Image (tube, rainbow, N blue to C red; front, side, top):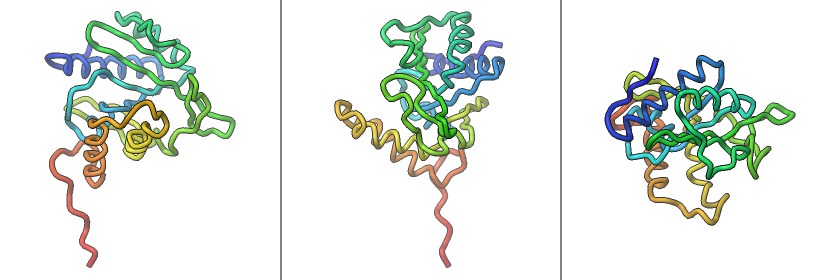
Amino acid sequence: MGWVGGVGVEGRQVGAIGEVLEVALEGGMGVWLRGGWAMDFHLGEVTRPHLDVDWYCWRDDVDRLSAALLGRGWRVDPRVPVDTQLDLLRDDVELSFAYLARDASGRVVVGGGPWAGTPLPEGMLDGPPGRIGELTAPIISVAAQIEFKEMYPIWMPQRPRRSKDVADIARLRAAATRPVGATGPAAPPPHPG
C-alpha cells in the first residue's frame, strides 16, 4: 500500500515516512526517526518545515532497505558516500539514513563513517513511538534528541548552533511532562504537598 501524506513537500515527506515504515515492516528491519521529524512525531504535530527526513537504521540492514526503496523509485544521492550513510532522493524529498551497529558489549554505536564505533546515548532506541495523525513511527528518545541538538556544536565546532535547534530544544523540554503525541500546553508538575 502506498502512503499518502497530503499536499506540498511536507505531505510528501509524511508520505515518505509511511513508505519507509512499510518497507521496514515488510523486511523485518528496524528504523527510527531522528532530527526534526522525531521531535514532531513526539509532539504529535508538524512544528516547522523540514529539509529532509532523518532516520537511523542498522548497518546490517542497509543493503536490503536500499534495494527495497530503490525498487520504489528512490535513487541514491551521489553527493554522500554510502559507507558513511545512505541518502536517497525522489523528486523534492530526501531521506537520510545514519547507520547503527553494536559493539562487543552490545552497546548501540555509530555504524559507519568517521565516528564508527562511537557509543550513542544509552536508551536512545528504547523510547515510545511518536505519532502524527494516524501515522505512528519509532523515534529516538527525547533525551537523545536533546543531547544531539545540544552537543552538535561541541562535537562539530564548524557547525554553529542553529536557531531551529534552540527552538527544538525548548519545545522538547516543554513537552517532557506530556505523553507522546499529546498537543497543547504541558501539564503542570504535581503539587509537592
